[in-house]
Image (tube, rainbow, N blue to C red; front, side, top):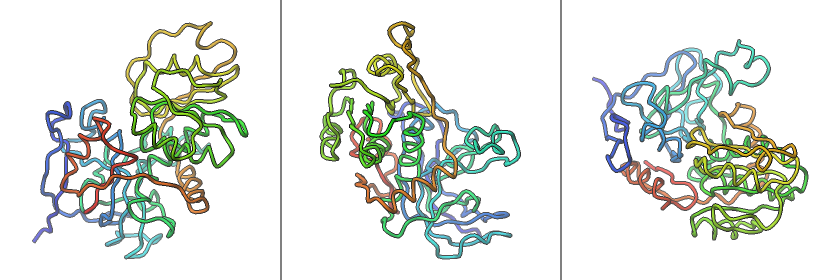
Length: 336
């Protein structure tokens, strides 16, 4: 007899008000070659999950189960799997597989692999009690972090860490952060630990309060000018209108990194006003396993304040709706 489990699937992408997530019953998957069967302990909710549900990212297959910030315990191992033992606590992140042989993979840029696949997009993710994952793309987790604290690190933390590298922040420089949700509140702490001055621009009053609690030097409205010129900036809000504002806030030679996988249209840029004086605009595309290892090592050595809002797995649809409405403080995390 097949073992069944409950999950949430995107059956008809649309505005969150149309309730695009549907509760479904699925058989518990069997792990394939070098795969692990993982029982859910916690799964953070990412804005990418919202983009998937609303159709900004078209699902790669019907009935996709979202969720790519998964903390779980190894329940079973497939043929050839040897990196983890049954009972180990592990993390499953956005990057699910790469080809390993293309030019991008060979040069250490596996996040650009044209054959890459992703958890919760190409293969079913963590909005379910069980999932499978290729053990080569699964991460050991620091014992110092609880399940609910570790979950947001696996995407929000890692992609923020890569965005910070792409922003090319000089030592003890000035960083501007646009939008202050799950990823931004972790990235700010990494920058502050390195001696940066951090200014936050966001529309949420509660997020501004959190930024100041964490030690950021100012927190103002999304379109406000920061109190000083920025050496670097990161745009976390998926709002293209903020790109010119962030570029104009940069000092000469400054860099803006756009961290999201989806962004609304960018208005026409004025070269002299927005880009001249060697300002640079960088995109951020996923992350590598090396990024994840580096960031998780940092988190093990440097205690982070991980702001979370817990939800039962049975209320994943409410968590996603709250995220869409900016009602989540820090990261929403689903718990079984």
